[in-house]
Image (cartoon, rainbow, N blue to C red; front, side, top):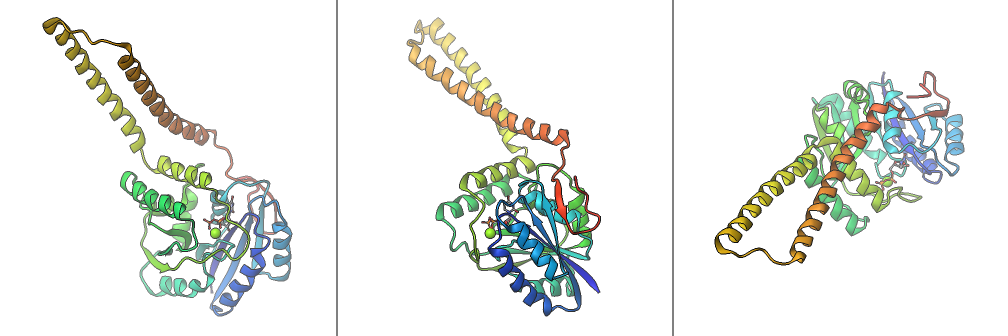
Length: 316
Ligand code: UDP
Ligand code: MG
């Protein structure tokens, strides 16, 4: 029998988890040709998520939990899931039912019968989401696809079912600054896309603030694109040539027409403008250096404080 790992990152999901479990179990019962192992990753929740997880694991042997020593973020939770899965297939699923378990049978059927390595899902609508968030999300996808070598699909969820080879490739990408949407695209393989209408969170609240999402988007671009850095140096070259031409222009005006450029305000404006650009470019370079710094420090992605699963690396 083939084994399927479902990886569920949970951060303060005490309300949603029992509902998720009931819904998922209904679907799993119809798929008795597979064995399922569901990995609940407690990402340093501050509510009763961990005790809810333990209760679920006590009553249902399909479920295992891994609990982090603090909140390491969804990316670290997903990585922990991939590193500790050994099934033929693995999928990430959110605990809030925004990744409908009802899609699982179709996804499994597709991997079994068609020549694909993964089945991914994308939302075709963003109903229920704040308008401003949708606007920025849409433009972020357009931008990152234009300037990076990662193929990121608009509306793509992290919910995708993958074959073992793909999971192994993801585990091998052990970078500290993780941007899974980019990683999934970067590693390649043949992916089939399933589309569905957005589903609202069943209980609890989203963990993403606008600022959090903005930082995540910047991280994604920095991780998969050198374009901001190239733009910064391009701007530097342009301004150097421009100022050189200005100098020649001023000398000619003074020497031939006896008309020196008057007034300090124009000068002050130019200095402030150039200084501003310099700081901006330095900031962009700084972002890359900071990422490199974090990467070379080689810190663990996550630290496990408690688990009921065998062979879990406590520090990874
Ligand atoms: N999550 C996590 N760690 C975090 C933030 C979120 O494990 O630091 C989990 C969360 O519990 C949920 C999933 O990641 O299962 C998606 O989070 P959320 O629903 O808040 O994001 P949204 O669906 O609004 O993008
Ligand atoms: Mg959600």
